[in-house]
Length: 104
Image (cartoon, rainbow, N blue to C red; front, side, top):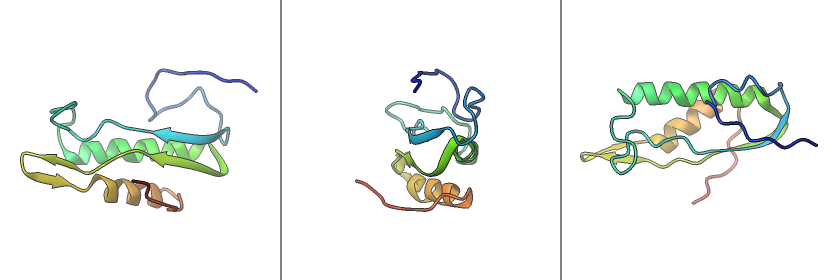
């Protein structure tokens, strides 16, 4: 077995073969969270596109029947709440993942 740490972008994990990973834990930057990532994304749609790209790439590298986790929370910015959990879950399900559980 080989272990490695790769610093890169989860939207393109070219170092990894198809169906070669058994567990994914991903914690993308929270959409423009004022405490850590203000103005990181130009729009919520840009953020959701990133989540979609990551979901597609995770689906490629994850072995059949294995688990991917998405560590996210809804984000409140200037009084507006963004449904990151619901939107991220839907994006992953649209990519072919089966929803299993929300862990709080």
